[in-house]
Image 1 (cartoon, rainbow, N blue to C red):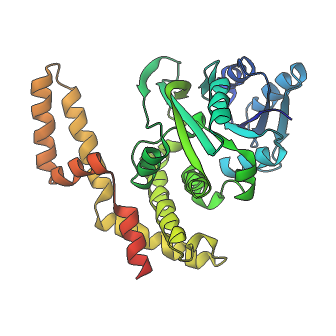
Image 2 (cartoon, one colour):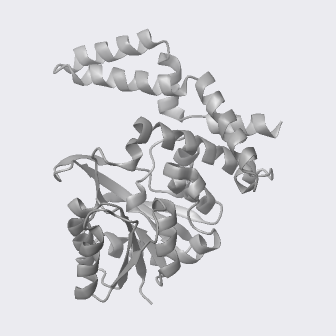
Image 3 (cartoon, rainbow, N blue to C red):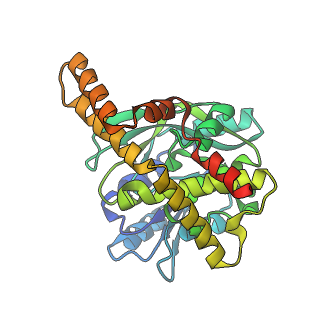
Length: 325
């Protein structure tokens, strides 16, 4: 049994797949397996995966019979996994050579962990580094950010305890582009989180990223839904997600969508983005700060935005409280 089973869901991934696979095979921890799941690609993704499988017996390839999306594809990989831990790496990202060794060292020293992540470096489509992204390292701070929709480590930097994920029945496809957020919340109900304070993964930013769907709004909307459902669960209320009635679920999602509109949630996010753009258009920091502040004030959201950056969003918790009434 390998220590880590690396799950890599692929769909039309041929451009970056060689680099992603090579980054796993060159890890300083060789006690691992790599499970490649091809989700009905129309390019030569499957051929690339099969080529690597021939050369390395640590690789298993799964070809999905029909296109299912990332959640179901990853679940197929989880069912095939043999490792104590599940490592996630998207097919366009790159793992640093010591990633899994360092994460397993932490897992061995802290037995109550169910999720371990790390800082990341974002890169462009050509592999050029953009910036390092830092995250909290302890459980309490990570959970606070998770609950308030603040900065949280990338899915591609994480390892999960396999037995816990299997008990939770993996990813839920109902959450579309927020299935990772839902899984993190359910994992938080079972054990502790940690993140290493160093970048162990390079996250590629390009126009085909799933997170770009609807300008990222779909993932944010369903992230709010996921946190709201989590608050309902931990307070002993029925989770709308578990309803077998699709109409009940859609009614709940529509209600949350309506409340997001009432809160002008996306308008506030766009105001912050525009203000930041004003700051970076100026070479002089002082004049940039003046343009930033002016833009915020003109948006009418200055106070709520500043409080949100300090404390995060209280929207999911308030929505759960409203629903419980």
